[in-house]
Length: 209
Image: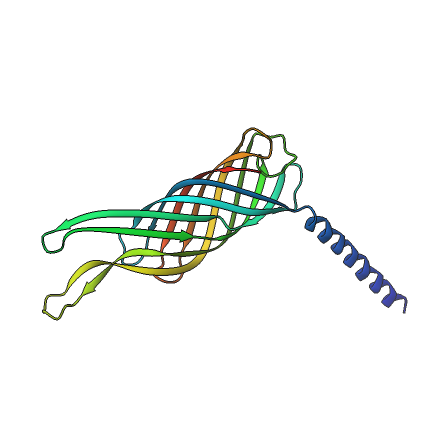
């Protein structure tokens, strides 16, 4: 009986400690977001690769925050735009427009600048991993058989969706108020579906808080 009581008390104490910790983390959350621009390259099966100019928006929630560190969970969204122009004797002038939406769910560890409302540091860094989504209108190379007996390869525009593991890392530099920072980052995603695209992005953002 004494043993059962002891086990019960130990489990109760552990549960109380867990709930207190959960309560503390839950109510120490804060919202952070930033916006900027950058560059991205994506290539995959049947594609020579495309270069994009990107617009970036990065909303995230900070939690487990201390004076000089925190964890964040967020969805940094990149909208990529690309275009091209070509001429051939058979098709004449042709132009293409491509777009890309890259939206991974990321969990990052953040240190010093940009990680907390209380930090006094002006330099910081972060890194993390997650799982991403790519969606867009891409140029792919296809074998065209027009029933003439002379099949040929040509670029076709197709909409593709793919998913895969993602990673990112970067630096932050405090500016103005301590909660504001300039962020420079590199991100990568390996597609596991669609045309198995490789996504590589470089960007710079201003974090508002």
